[in-house]
Each structure stands twice: as C-alpha cells, then as structure tokens.
Image 1 (tube, rainbow, N blue to C red):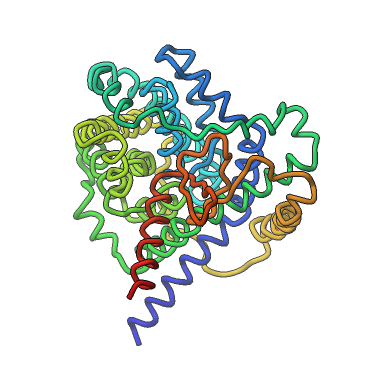
Image 2: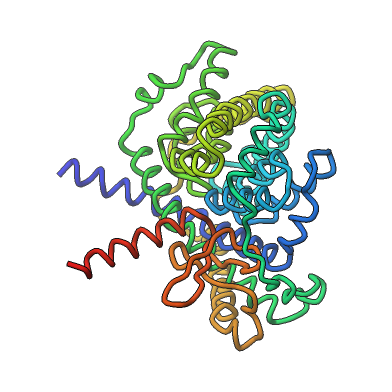
Length: 417
C-alpha cells in the first residue's frame, strides 16, 4: 500500500505541475504559432549564407521565431545548411530555436521563477557568442563543407512558399490566423510525448527521490568547485534523460528542488540539444567525427554559459537561493493560476475553432501535416518527404520520415506473411 500511495502522490505532483503551467503553455504555443505563420522560412535561407555578425544575429532572431521542438530545430538547421547557409549560422539557428523561444521562457517563469526565465535568455545569448568563438577553432570549414557535400543539394522546393504573401497582409487575414492556430495545435501535438514524459518523471523524482540522493551526484558546499561540477554534470543528466524542449522544464524544477546549483539547472536546460537521440541524428546528418565535435563543443559552451550566468546573477544580487518545499502546489485553489487557466482555455477553444475551419477560412495553402508527429510543415521548406501510394508525404524531419518508412516496412512484412 505504501508503494501505491507514493505512485499516486507522484501522479498528483505531475498533474499539478501541468496545472500550474497550463495557461503559460497555451500562451506560449499560441504566440509561437503566430510567429511561425507570419515569418517566411524562405527568407531565412537567403539571409544566412555567411558567418558574419549580421548573419549570426539573423540566425538568432529567426531561430527564436521558430518551433521549440529539438527534432524539428535540428532538421530545419540541416535544411538551411543544405541550401547554402553557413554551418555555424545553422547551428546558431538551432540553439535559438530551442533556448530563446517564447513558450520556454513563459513556462520557466511560471514554474520556477523570473530569475530562471531571464537566465535562459541571457545565458542563451552568452552560449551563442561562446559557440561562435569556439567554432572558429573546433569546426574546420573543410569538414563542414564535406558534410554539406554528403547531404547533397537537398531541399524540396516547390514554390509553395509564395502562397503565403507578405506578413502584413497575412496578419490581417482570417486565413493567416487560421494557419497560426493550426501551428499551435500541431506543435502541441508534436511535443505531447516529451511534455507528458517530462511532467511524469519530474513528479516521480520530486516524490520518490530524497535530497540525499541528489547530494551524492551534485557537489555542495565547495564554492567554485561545486558550481563547476554542477554545470558539467547538468548536461550529462540531460543526455540520458531523453527529454527535450519544454518537456525538460519540469525536470529542471525537480533538480532545483533536489539541490543542483542555479548554473547547473541552466546548463541542464540548455543541453536538450545533446540528448542521445539527437546525437544519433547528428551522426546521420554530418558523420561521426563532426557529431563528436558538436557534442564536445555544445557541452563546453552549455556548461560555460551556465557557470557565467550563475556568477553574473550572483554579482548582480539576483541569483535565486530559495528552494521550495514542493515543486508545485498539490491542491486546487481559487487564485490567479485558476483564473488564467480558465481564460486561456477559452482562448484555446477559439484557436481550436480557427484550426478546425482552416480550409473554410482560406488557410492551409502550401502546408501539410507530418503523419508521424503531427507538426504542420511548410511544403516549400519541408526537410524531408517520401512517396506513399502515389502521393508525396511531407515530414518535419528525417527522424519522422525514417519512423514512417520503418512502420511501412513493418506493416508490409506482416501483410506478406
């Protein structure tokens, strides 16, 4: 009975973490959907061809305006690189896509505090600067150009992107907002497993794992060496946790509750780009040698950015020190969270109506839905495609295309028995 009680408490903890962040998730995904619907990815490709400060700034801004899914970000970065963008600019785009997006900052603020949200954006900028500097030494142009040649010309350009029109026109049209709503639900569907897994694991960690366990993993009470060890170990926890994007925020909250340092939490959040599945994807895209260089480079800049943010915030007197007894309240109450959840559930209903009536409102032109993850894909810039029953199927990434083809092969093998 004691075990069943602990399991029930873990599920309750996970649910209330979700409840506390529900309105923030709706707001974040809604804003992200609007930005994706109104910012042309074709323009991104044309403006990232070099490695200068202007291109790095553009890559950062374009990345912040994209989906927060790590798999989609890695696929888009690969596509940009295939079509002529500089490799470092493409990687900067990927950094910004997963660490400087709106929904991540909002969820961090709500679940952990404004200091963590601010640290995410400040540290993200620091991490990008460090990566650009380190890449000049670690990533040789001949290696990246060889990787580009291995990828081939790539791309699935069919002119569909021209159907979008200018953003000023689209923002005034029902079709544009219907497409934005469709992006909102597609992104939420795409990340549903990561978010569910993140909340559940965080709930179980908060209830079942004692603080003494975390103290065995993360040093405490050793000054600078504590900070250094924590920011190095944080990314390792991310690698083996398999959770990416917004889904690792509940895990970060559980780690903060357990005793990891402020910088360690930030480096853990940054490290959603080096989870094991993504490392395998990098190997497929760029080869084993370049993948290992990316792992080492990413790990160094993520740890360094976490360490710098910790000491910067400490010097400014804004480093958080309070660790809550619980990660989230575990009962309903009439407070601002409940009020905002009700308001944004009404907003969600409106977005659902827009998405459901996308075709009738004139939207959907030039888009397809990835049949594996459910992401809305702009056909002109889809990273992957496959033929199925005489029709072209579009995917957000090669990861989803491979899963689709594996499932088709499995079904074909069963039918042939």
